[in-house]
Image (cartoon, rainbow, N blue to C red):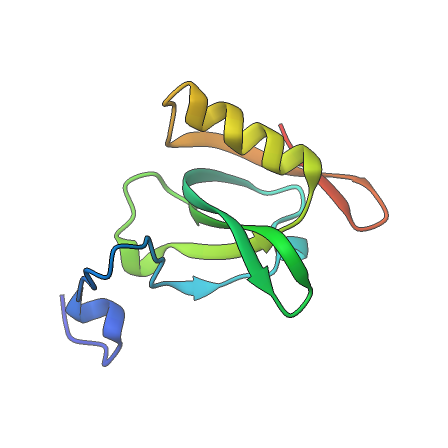
Length: 109
């Protein structure tokens, strides 16, 4: 693979004790009605929009390289509940579709 100049290409792992996702961000609304793989998530992130957000790492193809992964924030109670259950079952990665269930409300199916 040719060096594209990105930090992701160098695959530098920071050992600071906390999980991080070094990939590009995508808006949750851009994922509406799209299928993707849930790879991992981080709970209870504080953002400028408030506390308790989840940061979710996804891939469009399960075997994609990490530099093709994307991340997005959510405060959806439904999505947070589903993520916690997937973690409880130790069932990552998981193939899902992000569905719109109302005005700016999303869930996973």
